[in-house]
Image 1 (cartoon, rainbow, N blue to C red):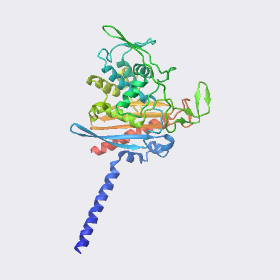
Image 2: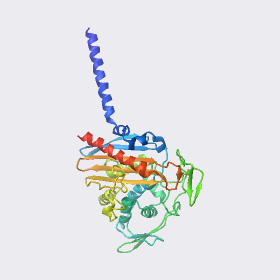
Image 3: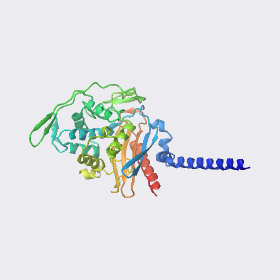
Image 4: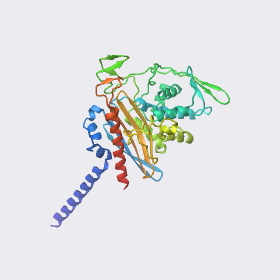
Length: 381
């Protein structure tokens, strides 16, 4: 009888542990909870996740004194499945520009410069602000000339961000030209010419789904064959997310994995990433608060509350829509990182400008952000 009773107690105790474990597991994955939502903005996309090529990476943040712990949750994240990163590539290029400037005590973000052959004189401060405020392509191209393809990829790979491959400029006739142009800096004491660089040939990407669609436009013609993306930029979800972690929480990484930024430059970068277009002098009617901030607010043109700080970079082209964001509610002490991509190109024709950004893509990312935020707010309570 005693043996039977002991066995029963042990069995009961074990079942309670399993039950508690199951309960913990059910509440442990906020991303899974959100993606089970009946909200039509979420459900429509999740029910056809393959067709929309959805990938999501969500990180909760737990601060313990001076330490930060990340818990990562993933949905369909696969670095081998190609998606076009579009303007999200401007994020690492801005960071690497600050790092390179930091290594040359003759130059800084306020030093006037021009690219050889370009009539525009500007500063890296202005160009980086344009990249984050309105995702300016010319600004990115000037930074690309300063860095060069090989320097970009080598620098990222050395920091452990190895899947990335940046190969070209954006929206310009010389997008794939290997050699970069010299930059002329006009300092207070002298004119400094930084020579251009010669870069290695672009190797074709060997990834899944690198040939896309049933056709693409070229000028006024439609080419009735899949579009080849094998020479284009690639910045997968894991890499984007890791870059954001290193920028926001550098102390969580070893010295060799961090970006080498001065405190002043990092403060500038964070301010640039979070500043709204209207605060950079852009017309708020055309460049509303959520113009390039898609999570939570992308489907609305209302004012983003001052206590909601969104540090992010978006990209959209060829029907691909990507956002990588660190979101911090300073009033309620809520913070998390989320990176996601979705493909909305129903007719499978590329470069025709017919994409379902407003109908499907942006509403999905906005609602995804809102529901993820709510899970963290609930956890706080």
